[in-house]
Each structure stands twice: as structure tokens, then as C-alpha cells.
Image (cartoon, rainbow, N blue to C red):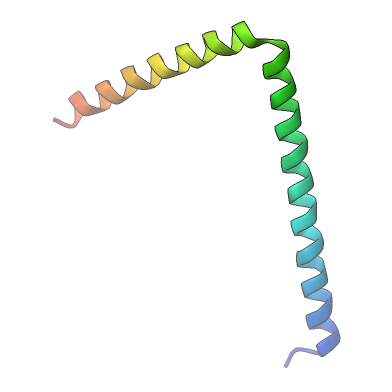
Length: 66
């Protein structure tokens, strides 16, 4: 049987972990957004290359499983 103090402690730990994960996500978002703002041309080139690469890989997979 779970002690009521243990249950409250577990909930507190879960809430604290959730807050920490949200903070990490916000920091990562701001780093990525800042990098995109400082390197717009490079971002466009990388986006184009990623789309071409994913298209080639998907075509290869399609032909492989035909």
C-alpha cells in the first residue's frame, strides 16, 4: 500500500520533471530560431538539400519494395 506522503512526493517529482523538460525545449527552440535568423541563406540551402535527399531516399525505398 502506498503511503500518502509518498504519493504526494511522486506527483511533485513528476511536476518538477515536466517543468524541466519544458525549459529544455524552450532553450533549444530559441537557439535554433536564433541560428536561422543569423544564417538565412545557409538555412535555405540546407532545407533544399534535406528535401532533395529525402526525396531520393523515398524513391529508393519505393523501388526497393516494388
